[in-house]
Length: 500
Image 1 (cartoon, rainbow, N blue to C red):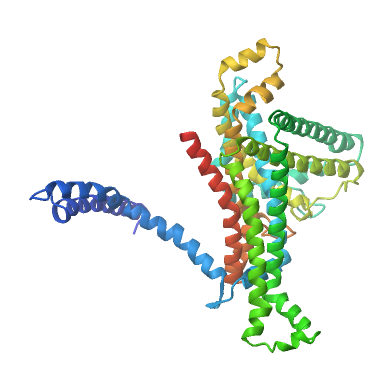
Image 2: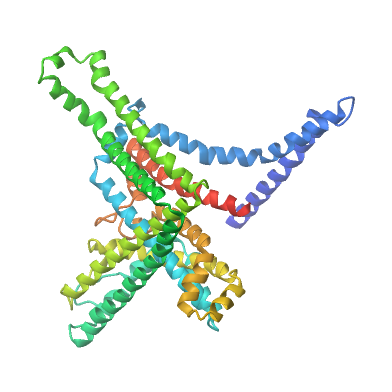
């Protein structure tokens, strides 16, 4: 069958099926199930009106339940089983013992810090600057254009930019073509060391200024509100949460593998332990009871930390919530400054391999950043569009009042506009964070997770579809879901708050 005819056939069947479902289900409801006639006409009408919305929503609910809810429960079930047998946390234990998993976690953490920060910063900069120039609409269109390209398509484009040919051949990769033009002379020093060093210094200064802007109101608010006890509580809660997660991860690694071996050695070293012979009571006292105690302690620590942190997030203590957000922002700024200082040190003290084409995607540490550039390139347009709309919504009278008070453009931008659109910035940041947690195509298309560029989604794909290890693959999927869920809840909470 011709594809065009096939597509037309599918459209007719799909649209006709929907129209037929709504027409006949409505007819069945009004004429057969609850007819509006006889002595119960009034009651039937009210019942039909009560059921009608659910009847119309039923196809969507069934589809969502089948394709969204069921896979979650099925994945959780698979993560606790191996070859159909219940194995508890063994899959999580095996996953936690693999170096590739921790490499994925480390890379994902790097992606989570760098990509949302750079995408939001570049998007905010583009939104501010493009509104001030005559050809701003064209600039916005060009910046937004990568959003129309799939991740795989963008990866192919950037793979050509990073392409490497053997020494002596013409380089078709843009980066190597530029690199091969440098010979180590004064021009190379100026363009590859002095100019980038000045740029990095300006970035470090800019991030330090942003960090100061974030820190100053927090310190002032703490002094004004006398919230030192809140800060101490927050620090204790954070420390408890970190310790709980670390102990929990350690417990998952030990249980099912190390614990029985350790307990077996202990049982051979003392008279008391010779009472255990490996039977049911031995398993109970050596494995079940210690596990229950450890889980109980961890649960109590988790409950204590969340009982402080959750109220800070959800309205009971707005000051503490703002403080926590600012503390996270300061942590990100410190990390970025530390990375930039590391780059600056390497740039100044490093020896440039002039005259040799570089295989950019195999360079350890740097190759992850080369991959991140692709996602930053795509997401900057999204951030720019949202933040541009938010900047247009800033009341002009506040800007005019700041100008009358003698504020310069930087003060107007950082102290008048940015605070008023902070909620939009947070939404953009968290939305890009969710995209980063799901990043898969770029890494698969460009490095396939080699050269220490593995991320969680690719690790899950390797386990599920290459190693056919459904247990560990499902456990890694659950880890991704657990990481995404708090951000989703936060976004939904903010959306409902803005609607109210």
